[in-house]
Image 1 (tube, rainbow, N blue to C red):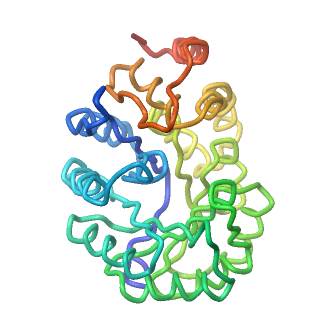
Image 2 (tube, helix red, strand yellow):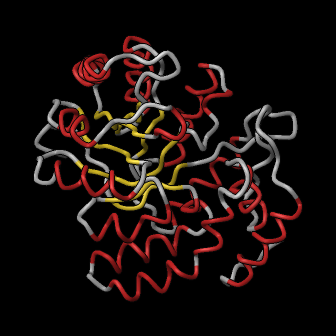
Image 3 (cartoon, rainbow, N blue to C red):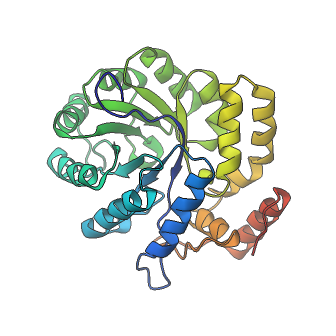
Length: 301
């Protein structure tokens, strides 16, 4: 727990995809298998119902079920972060309260997007949520998806709010460097990065963790990178990182989370299709992913 009284994310965090059956209904048996797999291979926490989890093509009841089942399946072995962002603060607080009752440790919340608000509107949005949520709030900077940038100075303002425990920064390296530098030393607050290619530099400059998609497929290797970085063995971390270069690239070579689901199927974890209007992974990319998994020593199907 932090000085703010709420859990603070750190370490390696899997942004979980949501497995579906062929008819696009949720496959909770496969979801449990995935959660068991990443936790048993060392993931420090998991994100349920985020972008990789396809929350944006789910009903509210489905979003709640994904959060509830993730907490049930994690069973206290690792903290669960719940994707609880909705367009209004009131609705976000309601879903975050539900997640807290299920046992989630924090809520991940995007800023208002599409019809965007002002800078002060963003601050007021997060302040209202953080002041009324029973668990910590992670503000999510993801401008390539939202067209809204939480600039480093704005991240600093948010970091100083009671109840804001983290920034997930899925942005370029310069943004992350500035955000880490500005927020360093704030008690009860962390910065985690959302781009696999920035894992090593992000940890090297003092960020506390990473939240990613390849983490679902090769959790053991991701945790090894983190452990080596924490031990200041950058050379060993870089060697593993280099081996994962192509796999990381392929995970977003085509619209995600299709490639992640394809990779999970290859290692024996049912993931199923992505929901329309998202598109399925091409056979050509599947062949490339399979080749990389074999090179990494995985027994692929």
